[in-house]
Length: 111
Length: 113
Image 1: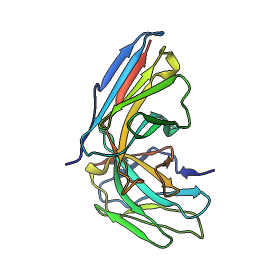
Image 2: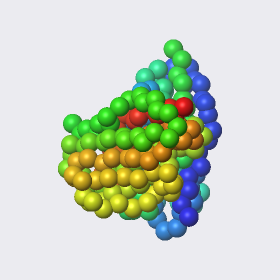
Image 3: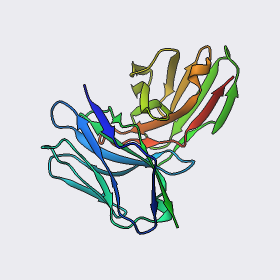
Image 4: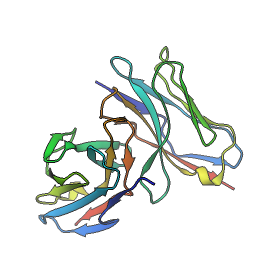
């Protein structure tokens, strides 16, 4: 079946630090991959996505590259801000309606 | 701006009560979903609906039912609430054109005593 494993948190960083959240997946075929973000008190919102191998998704300074050879989709940001404090979810879809989510990683950025 | 709204942000119920969680989307989306979110477990799909009056079980449907009488509204029903149903419940919707991109509501935090 399909599954997503992401690094456990919580992660605490200082402003302007480099952020990496690891995500690996197990799936049959060629799924689409996603990062969703949940800010405090809000629902999830799509941060970025990639639909095929070697695609790079990017948004708000975050990037992730679909690596089929390592079945990974790690999220990175070069310089985080306090406003990036949130829970980040890696997810995959076998290109239908269904999403499989990782457990989520809580990130706290200190000023 | 796309919008998914949920009827309550916080709810406290007693064991054995019947609980209704309501979700409304204004994007004319065909697909609607109910998830529960628990620490360390991420989001788990309870039920999915792809059209009015149509539903499919997700990964953890036991103890829940759903209703979709109108396209914009999807209700989650706990027939007899139990303490292990204390959780955050998230509703989402997606269109047939872009099924894998889901739009989420703010969530309902349910406490069952």
